[in-house]
Image (cartoon, rainbow, N blue to C red; front, side):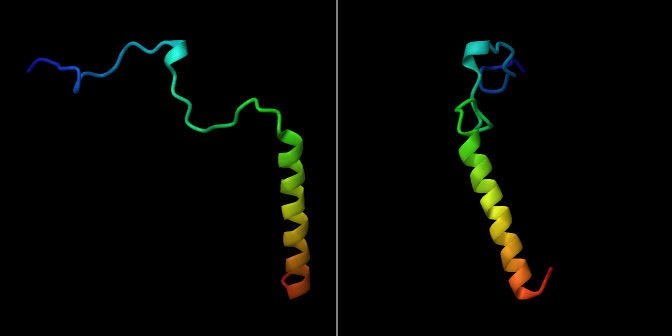
Length: 54
């Protein structure tokens, strides 16, 4: 059975043809992300303390 373009594995992958999958990028918003992350940690700690779970 000969390989067709639909069934053959793709062997040519160039650097410029890579597909982005939504991973971390170099957008430079790390300060905002750090602030949001630490705010979430503090709010969660306050919630756990107020409910007596911590």
